[in-house]
Length: 110
Length: 113
Image (cartoon, rainbow over all chains, first blue to last red; front, side, top):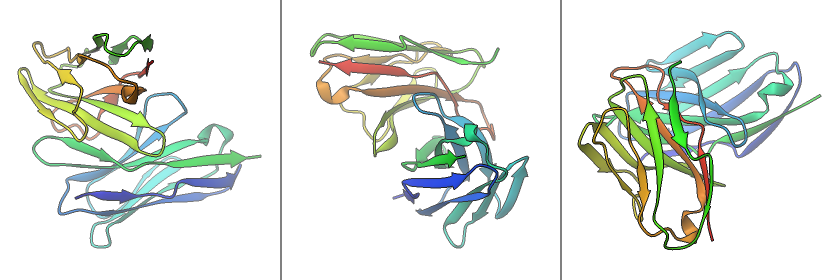
């Protein structure tokens, strides 16, 4: 199986840094995605990690450690518009299957 | 503009009345997929398609059908909708080797009464 675990909710302050963790148990996968989803809207792509290490993209960074079954999304200089759900998803196999965690709802407060 | 288009955005229907949610993409993507999203359960895959005339079940296929007669279209069919199919549905597509994952449609909020 590919159990994917994320915290259900997090709260952070505008201007701060927040780290959203994702742990998983799987026999194999090609890469790990992070998506952002505002309430009632479609998920939008944030990052994709194939190799271990940190991928930086402006205010957003994502880290992967395959040996530890662990990833995190780091959001810097938080803005109110970052209030959303953040979805961790494993991608793999010939079928291009994308399996999602249940997501972390982030609330950014003034 | 590259996009995945779903219709309708909102639909209220009655139990047992057949319905189809359409999905079309203009990116010439091979892979297409349907997800449903429910509170506390996240996005769960219903069906997916690797190319024209190639479809397979995802994690929650019961009560749904799909077809892929053309590359751009991947409709989701509910032959006899039931209240437990009330959900938010997303269609998504992906090209070969794309590192941007799936591109999602805007969603269809379905209510079955």
